[in-house]
Length: 72
Image 1 (spheres, rainbow, N blue to C red):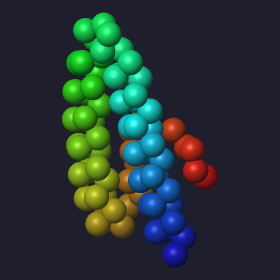
Image 2 (cartoon, rainbow, N blue to C red):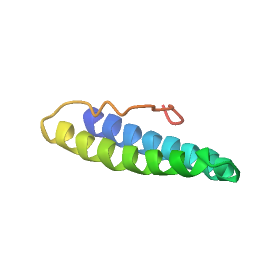
Image 3 (cartoon, helix red, strand yellow):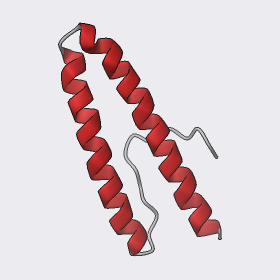
């Protein structure tokens, strides 16, 4: 279905975005700020996935934060 296709693309795009943010944060671990950013990215990933699952259960679009659209 169209709704399921949108949900899947949004989830994949969000995880690819999180991967990109984690790689950038890992590079920045040379400086102390990278360690903090890795923790923020990890917590953001967990919270956003849980909230998106709840919204999907209610039949709404997930609305992931900081989403980069790699797959359209």
